[in-house]
Image (cartoon, rainbow over the protein chains, first blue to last red):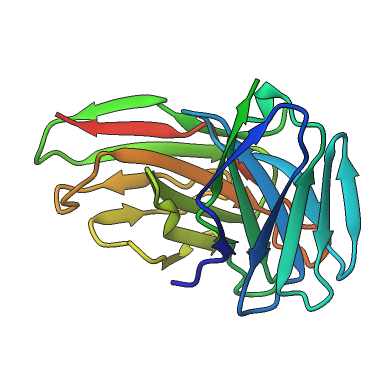
Length: 112
Length: 114
């Protein structure tokens, strides 16, 4: 089945640094969603994007819906230790047979 | 509080037994999904349902079965035919609207075959 492309699988940054992750697809979507998952828990929705070119912030997080509708990125500024976790992107083309499609996730580690 | 609830959080099963994982939502969402998560594999879609009494196979449906008799509930049965059932199972739901769709997850169920 189709999956979105997220790479690398792991990222290691220093506390206080900014980090950017992107997500690409061969198909267009009209909704992009970004999630964070802590160990042993379900993913939690961070940001939802609905319009090509849209830039949305949630605290230190900023995400953008790519103009081509085939990509999105998430930026975390001034990272802190609790940013550690797995970050997933998801695409959705809403309609009669819409189906959520996920990337494989990026595991973020933050060194104090 | 509106949300999506999975139970139990931890489940142990003996080989050869069927087991059913519960997923309930009170968000009035039309669509519900089951995913399996293994280390390094991301989220793999097992089954999904867009509407009551209808569901479709995902990418790894073999050895699993579902039902959708009520809008609020989408239980997943892991059958004895599933060769490697030990995993973390996640349920999600979305509205079927065309505008501002959001998807929410339950807390997950960790199934271990002993």
